[in-house]
Amino acid sequence: MRYQRSSKLFSAASEVIPGGVNSPVRAFKAVGGTPIFVDKAKGAYLYDADGNRLIDYINSWGPMILGHAFPPVIDALVDKAKLGTSFGMPTEIETQIAELAVSMVPNVDQIRFVNSGTEACMSAVRLARGFSAKEKIIKFAGCYHGHSDSFLIQAGSGAVTFGSPNSPGVTKGTAKDTLLATYNNLDSVAKLFEANPLQIACVIVEPVAGNMGCIPPQPGFLEGLRDLCDTYKSILVFDEVMTGFRLAKGGVQELSGVNADIICFGKVIGGGLPVGAFAARHEIMSYLAPLGPVYQAGTLSGNPLAMAAGFAMLKALDSDKELFDRLAKKTAYLHKGIARVLSAHQIEHTINRIGSMISVHFSKIPVVDFETASLANNERFKNFFHGMLAGGIYIAPSAYETWFITDALTYKDLDYTIDAVEKVAKTL
Image 1 (cartoon, one colour):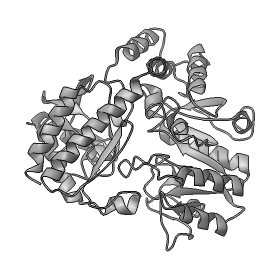
Image 2 (cartoon, one colour):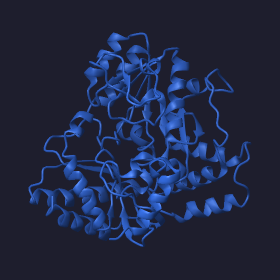
Image 3 (cartoon, helix red, strand yellow):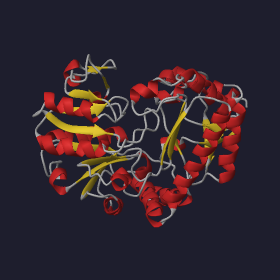
Image 4 (spheres, rainbow, N blue to C red):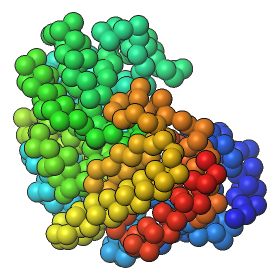
């Protein structure tokens, strides 16, 4: 495939946009080369600026669970746009999507809409701090909750030390209130609570990690977090920006039977538009302004176009009783095919999968946390990525990102993808 126009577009973008992109992972820094510029997408396919068709496995990093340009979403968006694009005043559709979302998700009474997953997680942590009257939070190495200062923290010199910022611009004062634990390791969390028994406002976690590749929680991990938060009177926050409305109608709470106190949403809930949300029980949400003292606001929060797209998406998900089973079967089929090919070529690998999320790690050991994910052969992944791209398959341009399966993918598409892996495997 040729990417001459994408290269020219990237050069032009680099003159006026830092790094030529508006989100770093798009820049191909992790895999090398020039990013692909897209002209349009439909169903399971991307069509780039050079006229190439690519089978898409990132699906806008998750939202396109029913495929690109899903007609009910597009129709709702167009119809709403004709009435005006933003008012800064309440609209009925905000209530309609809120009622539907609350009916689909366990253990929540109210939801507030914002403009991104980052904003949802940032607001959830502020709400947890306000409700608990505590200041410190626990997060997990390798879990990404957006680019708010509190989340851009790496480990200090030991499991119970204060965090240190891993991005310039994050102050040491902010970092000291973020404590870092190891994903799937309850002992690391317990030690932080023991060292700070009265200070931890919340634990925020991706209940299925998606930013170090797909890493499901090990048995008892989420249950253990719930028990620790109950013991120390801390808030448990599930960041379901990726998993909400994707792994089940009620997300990981439904799958696991573990109830969080605050749940963050994004991606699918916006139908492809920039939408985030956070939800909780009445007693917690009543702390939000204008009812309570915790301030949160946004000019474009509840934007009618975004609400229309999200409402159409959630209605489609709610009405299709077989969707999540279909998605899981397609993902399992892809998993089996890729594993068969890589094993036949004696290529060390670990494949993690849950529902419609999957990732391939070129590692011989199980990948259960950020440390084990970082031990994989990322040079091999780079070659794998570019080989797949040359074969017309677009996967995430980073070994630390999940692939997302869309219902628009056919088994013919999956077989084509497995055949592409066969061709690439001969070169790895």
